[in-house]
Amino acid sequence: MASRTVDVTLVSARDLRDVNLVSKMEVYAVVYLAGDPISRQRIASDRTGGCNPAWNATVRVTVPASGAGSGALRVLLRTERPLGDRDVGEVILPLNEILAGAGEEPIEAELGAYKVCKVGSSKTHGVLNLSYKLGGVIHPPAAYYQHHAAVVKTGEPAAGYLAAGAAPYASAPPRPPPPQQLSYSYPYPCPPPTMTRPLRITSR
Image (cartoon, rainbow, N blue to C red; front, side, top):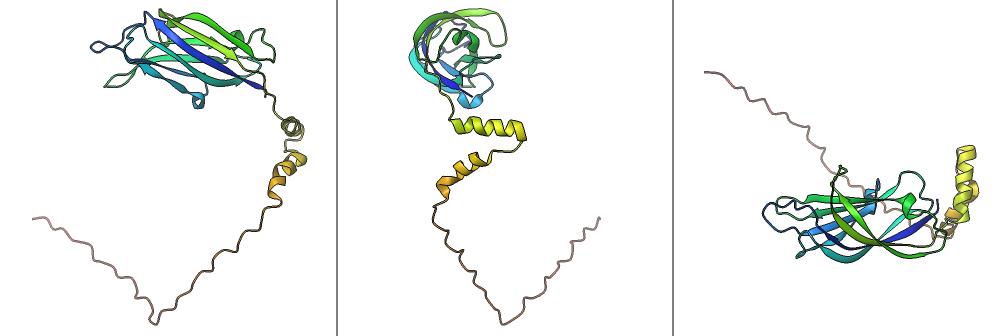
């Protein structure tokens, strides 16, 4: 599957919902491809901005080049708290909107302002300013397509694909023989196991 990178730069946010009752909010962001927790990346907290944080930090996420389906980039805003961090809000960026009309060449950054929604709700509170830049489309090598076509047709991997993958190991030096195990003989046989009598508890 072809892919491309998206560089997401979180610039700042304003008028965020204050979820801290006592202390000042220290807001950070987590950016990832929805449904892919491995892609999660965190942007450091703003210690002084409170409800109006500023980061000017960039993360890079790899996404499918087609953007088909319901894929999306999720920007989750959270605040640090002594008793456990708490969600502040989120912005969802559908891939079909980010990649709409994009060719295979890289595209310069586009800056936009997005309403911050309460997590799991359509209620909005605050605005997130961010930009995203698209990298060029990356196609897998031809061997990948040959392998994929063979699996679809026969249900088994293509022999040529496996041979190509095994080629780098063909000239590997032979492994050394395993170390010999030492055998020991004892002049006396092992004593038979002894059994302990169960403790009898008598009631008074």
